[in-house]
Image (cartoon, rainbow, N blue to C red; front, side, top):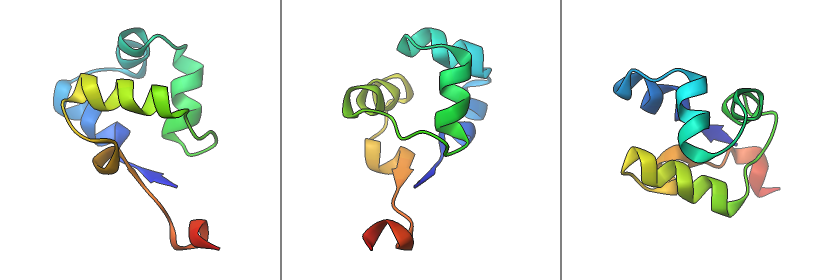
Amino acid sequence: MKNTIKIERAKKNWTQADLAKHIGISRQGLNSIETGKFVPSTLLALRMAKVFDTTVEVLFQLDDIDFI
């Protein structure tokens, strides 16, 4: 799964720690999501979308391999 979290953070000039604080997780947890090592829960994805004032679909996109 691809994501645009880093891009959205840059638009707000936020660090990983800043975003993690806003959504209630650790910076390390956010790093795992941002680098694609961990897929967030629906609740967490919705929290991220809310703080960025966007949709989950903008933040997360399926790779072709995710359809198999």
